[in-house]
Length: 223
Image 1 (tube, rainbow, N blue to C red):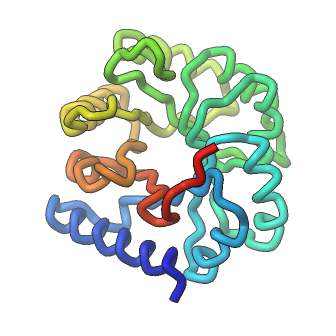
Image 2 (cartoon, rainbow, N blue to C red; image 1 turned 60 degrees about the vertical axis):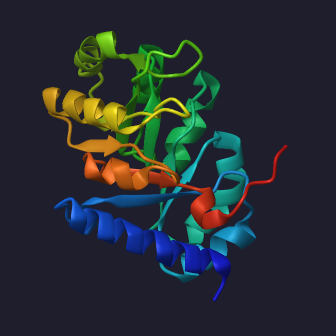
């Protein structure tokens, strides 16, 4: 068995244990395997195991790597978990089924204009800058209610949840709990939060989508 397959089994077992421990249904927690900077040869063991939910950070890398794979595997969901530049919107809606990182009205407008019957994009998460870090993307907490309300004018867009990344080297639980509270306040069903080092905490606090990369794929090559 390939080491990636072993890691996948291990993470799925941890998801199940954490879900049961915190009275969650394991089927309600979706595992996004983040494959940024990993070539197709590293993705194949996951496909061979039947895993179909993946995440990428950059549009061009995703197009180069995934177009052929998507044509051969119709059940795959590819989620964008990195920032989206305006000049990449048309490509993004054609290859991603979900985007987790929306934080600007202009991006919503661009997506709404670009969507058509051939687009794969179905759902969108709004990224929240939960810790108000000036160098991090995301809508400020103080502005999220207004942002979501204004987003309702875009008739083709389906906003389903919130996404966040807590600051490094801080206890993530307080941020996850607050994101859960924001989602409930705005009647949003899904929470994209938790990565390789804190996904079990995220599950305890309501995560529906966790983003795990290196714990499954192994260390990324540093550029």
